[in-house]
Amino acid sequence: MDNSDLRRGKPTLHKVFGEALALLAGDALLVQGLVLLVQGLASSPSRALRAVEILLAALGPAGMIGGQVLDMEAAEKNLSLDELQRLHAAKTGALIRAAARLGW
Image (cartoon, rainbow, N blue to C red; front, side):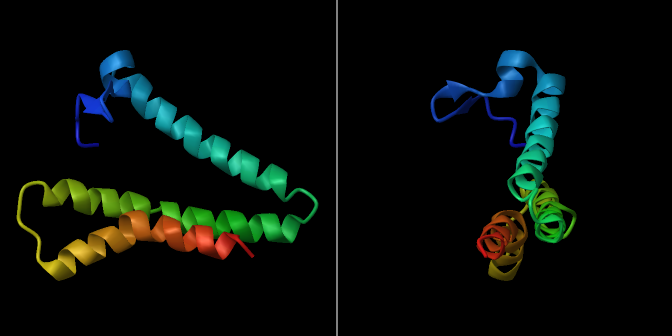
């Protein structure tokens, strides 16, 4: 999302394969993660459904995606500590909380 040419010293996906394919790769990884989650809990449909609910809530507008929107908007300005904490709580924090909740 930051349009960097390099990540950890290597060319980023959008530089190697183009923006469209990089976006589709992210979409595919998200879907594949849900497939693996459901497959891992196939013996317990109610647990699988609850796990998907937890993960989707963490990924959606109130979680990682919403946090990424805040992050892109923040690139143009200086954030207060409260704004920065809200951004991280939504973006990274939502996924960390979901991982802890999924570890039942």
